[in-house]
Image (spheres, rainbow, N blue to C red):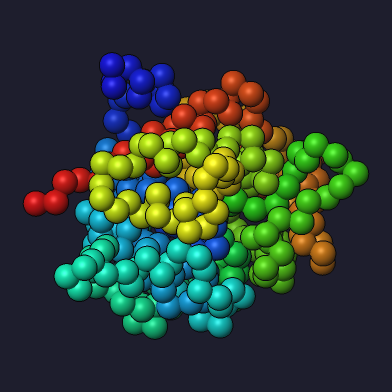
Length: 329
């Protein structure tokens, strides 16, 4: 029965080569970043992806520590983590404090060894080092936070050249492209927090970009009942605790960031359709404007999702997010 469900969600169960993934996140600003990281680890356990690194665009020391705690829980304690310096968001966040939580006996609730982002390498140097060691055209980057890290990478000519050579596609959660009221332009959070970085990346990033707009995550919102009832297989689950700390149920949280991860790892499973090719520009007020290209050679596309696809996307995100971490040895 489980294999049938997986087959319905993901299509053929034939194993493809793992997607080499870099995950760039503003962990702590919304719980959907955590949903996405839980998904990645569930997919990594299945061999669908290889998480090369997590880079953080939230400039608070607990953000990287919490990422390390989650990586450790899922059995990947040595996943490289890089951090932004002098980033746009410096506040603690509502749930990264879980990295410092203790059990009654004084032990860590979520064991990990990276105690602070101050002890992690700078993100651009880490990305540059990792790209240099990968085959050409083999890396997918999922950026679900601010544009700061990847825009700064473009300031390094060698790093930009590596991105052009090594990165297959950049999957971004940002912007808005199909808002219901076309007279109202939604100013999306990931863009708004660092507009100059978003403008630079949209203009100068050297590989194809696929944008998951605000409207996609809203249409596939995560059912709050899953958080309330399906994560009690652990006495403490970071996704459940973070969801409650961020915004307690009952509310269905949009799955903005998980949609970019789902596309990054499974671009050909019919979860989404794609717009025609074009180019996205970021305006000074943070609005994202997509212009299709007449010759079909634009570098950018955005995700499109109908009601049937939204149901599949929601179920895939739920199943991957709540899949248990491996049992402790």
